Length: 119
Image (tube, rainbow, N blue to C red; front, side, top):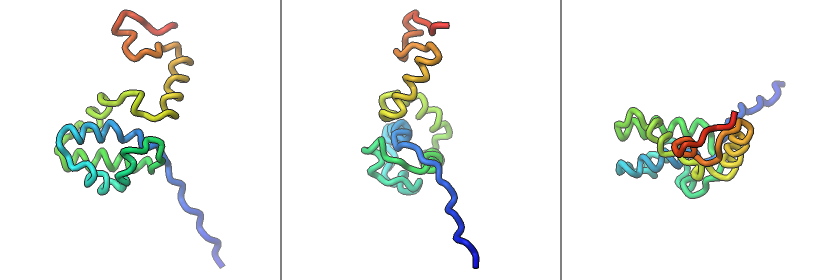
């Protein structure tokens, strides 16, 4: 008699990571709900940033969005679009802790205004 095989673990991430991708897709006029469905992401993930989704889904969203919209640099555009506020509370706290630990300014454009990280 064989023992039941354990399910392979699935990496999860918060749905907030798709917000910048969705913003770019909306800006170019994509049918975002359709692209989300093709990536295996439920439409309500757009409004629930704390929802957990498989990490692989965000990669599928990037690939599907890039393919259907002809945007080879969708990941770059989404990265430029990303703001800490769009990442959800857990990621915001993680980013703040990281900046405090490294001496980085908490204000995102402090360097542009003449500030610099403490060393």
